[in-house]
Image (cartoon, rainbow, N blue to C red; front, side, top):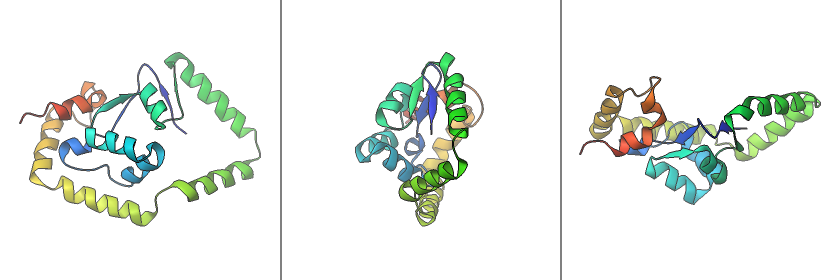
Length: 153
């Protein structure tokens, strides 16, 4: 389950802006959660999406006001914890068996991702983003869609 703050959460898949794809099963995950058309939009646009849009698209279960998020999740967790654990465990396993990508598809995605990010154009874009703070706490991580769109041509 995925819950997010309306005021703080940002969702996106910036990889196509660098010439790559979401790796490690990311494509299968997005198609299953969002459907084909929205998954294509998310993947190829490399844009940022707010929590309300992510909720509407089926990317997350709920977008909540930041002040309510922790309390909601805590109440839900306590409720679920009060149920017989075997029933919860089996329900999750059955849903996972029906909806998650196979290990073979995840390995295939990972290999495709690795081949794409090794390309010179992708390396150039990733190096550019790294110079601006990719994978470090800060503003770039909250605005990757804009950053990949602003890549100097």
